Image (cartoon, rainbow, N blue to C red):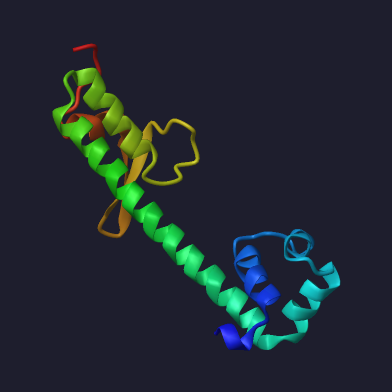
Length: 138
């Protein structure tokens, strides 16, 4: 890859891939902004490499997000199942259910659950009770 690009292009590639503007990249690399524009718009190999590096960075960020989300879910599950008080378990369950989808309310009081052909509207309190979680200060 290094033979396909100049030293300045190699310096600009990661900057552009991570979201630096053309003008900012030009300043850091020591070229005119029009040069960056020329590379992006008239050098297919350069533009393709920027796109590839962006995809790679996005994939890495998504993998990190998935790992973090997995950890957060395990933490919420632990609170839900092993919270020291009913109140802790209730708040964990309420948080999980409230984030499970867009219910059109900031604090949903009911939840659409599919049953056959017709969704059934279930009260949030009943769902929590079904999980064995009571709201209280225990």
